Image (tube, rainbow, N blue to C red; front, side):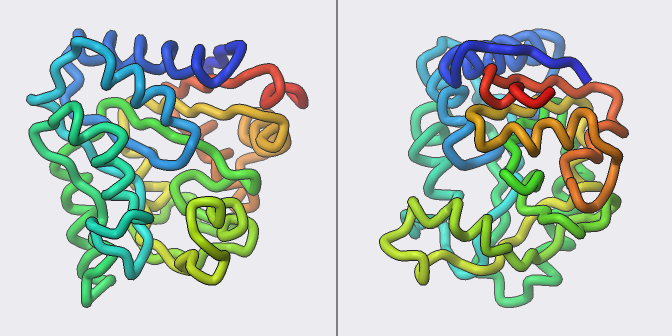
Length: 233
């Protein structure tokens, strides 16, 4: 696990973009992408660059159950607004939150992951150590599944909704095992609120109580953090 310390999220976004640019030059074709505020500076760098993504495939980590792609709170809409509408990709995959059969949707999505091996996986980390929507207690070999979101995750995401009651309580998420199929991991974390999770991920035991600790079992992980997020290392 390689740790890169940066001054702030803007510098972190630039560093992550450099790594993606290097990866694409070396032949990377599939990017695993994340949502939330953490990767926004990366997507800004991607949009403002002259890099061509039209032959690239993207696979997103997760989507809220019950929200369609046209819903402004959906992760499909987030990705369209932040990246895809401005930098077209060859194919973009996000779980279908409106699928009638969620078990079948999880199986379908895992098949997409297996047929498009992720070259570079972008990750954030939750305050409770979740990656994707894999909350504490999730088996470390889990595949794409339906997740019951914890109260802390719902509270962390309520800023995107009018009121906390509007926040979906379930999501379809790549499992921890699904994520670890990717060749390279780039995890970004900023702010003091992430310090405990970063410490548990880097220094703690590998345990289902800290889902991100599973990254210790992967042989190519780069962690980009500011001083606040690194303060407990």
